[in-house]
Image 1 (cartoon, rainbow, N blue to C red):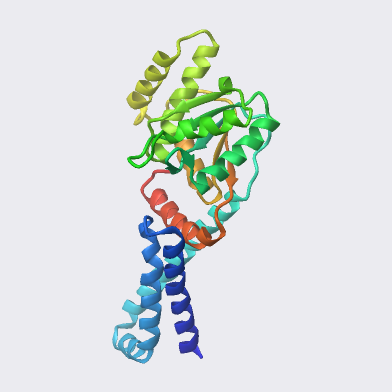
Image 2 (cartoon, rainbow, N blue to C red):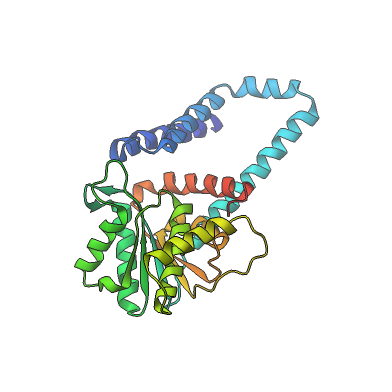
Length: 282
């Protein structure tokens, strides 16, 4: 019975790898996790008796320590996954001062499925909150004809959102840069609203961020209420990074993901949360 369950679980993991690769390709290296997991589960199931014999030959302290480490690791992973799911399901309050829409892949000039879902969520919020501005954050990849920020702006303006409410940040390449550069754009917009400069203010704000990045105990500027729009699996980690960037009053707005990507993206994100937490990045 146990062997049958092990072979079934291992086979399902390998089948998921095959189907995911066929549907979405192998651009995401984490997809190979499912292939490796399936092979390991089937191998361990097939060698069950030998593994038990090997375990019995080890000193009790060794295998008890290994089992304890495994249980702690599994517990931390389960906690990280629970936080990813919980925060991804939350909904922000209305009346935010700024949205920050995190970019994702653009195919030619069109948003990818993930980016389109983020844009749909941002569009609903902007329509319900006409005083909210949006920072559209995303640079241009090698295979993209325009920046992610420009693709987002094209979609939102075509849907009737006033271009004056949109602030483009078109240099970032990852989540940390999304939020750091968006912070500089928000600071510049606040200065501009108060009668300061425009692009020069953004450059100066970014330079100030670099100068103070490692300073401890510095008072955080007041950016008002900010809502970060990203995929639901990505909300928890994005909020952790945002708070390190000084966004004290940040909330998340999670957009949906394609159903067949959910296991891959959520498991990968749980591992990423653990890595960022242990490295002090969130």
